[in-house]
Image (cartoon, rainbow, N blue to C red):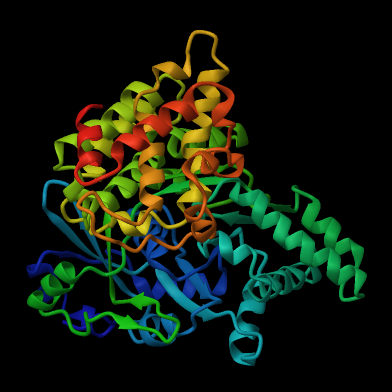
Length: 498
């Protein structure tokens, strides 16, 4: 069973092994899309293949859409060269459900793959052609927040936007779908900074800058995305090999990207987008994507990162490292840790949760606690989530502390779990686990600096915690718990006492 246009002609073999296949005329969709492109996405990674491409797949199957997706890769060209094109841009999606079942599906909605390389005339010419198309409604990104700070990448994107401007100031939505706060604003800032520099250097007219700043022509909507798509899992790979799927072994590129002809992902997913599309948009709401106003997108993000998911993730990351766990789902089998994150979300976070209305905080949190974190098929690790913890604490815990301080009917004295997590972070900085074994902390820009400071001085860092912990008794309580956590077995004792 080869994942290619030719290989899919033997539908019976695939369907007998339980694979859902495209139900539309893919050749016709490819032709439609190349003639009148609608959506181009930058970033050929797992989240895009598992989420956005699957939404479009469903809409193609239903006949709601008649054009597919074009993907462009601007960082690791080998993804396109070694996976996309040899597989005719087809992909296998293995959805790992919390009940232990796996849904297998061949996704055909990505109909063309491009390389964002200005030194390759053939590749960049095709992208310029796409950007000149009046039919193009949106370009989107999953290139991580770091991508917007990478000048080489953003220069190429701005060059393509200049192409669209020269084609008649054609309208377009430029949509960040990266998992970072105020993503659309960050993308707009990166684009405008370059365009203004180009104007100063005589590379473009001021009219181009005006075009980018006119939201009636070029819009940069905010979005909130949430779906876990770990790198290709060995268990899933073996399942596909046993089915007879060829070339399921992941490739590691020279840039250390793990890519395979399959992607594994959890079933839960959320994408909320500010409805700002100057050239119209596909009916993606029919595929479960929520379109709303700017304020509501902001609220969904706050709900997720301040209360319902990210604080729980960080708590499990810190204590997972201290207690020697290698997977998040194993931590949820630990009664002390399960109790910790349940109380953190349901008892402490919910009192100050921001309710966006388009998603229920209670239902979102229940899905996190009962489906997402305990999913035995999701090979996510506390060590991965512990990366850059110093950068995450201000939002994931500082905002809750601020909300308690700002509410006359609440007091931070009632917070019992938050100080335990912050004490756990101080203990994590020691690099010694609860059994007295040395472990290597995850990468973090402030790690070396914070490790050298006394605990009381770490707690003075507003840049780390987002608030002055000495403003009330929070710092004192954290230090007491941290002191109790020192020594072998004492982290566990503090968790038992929560």
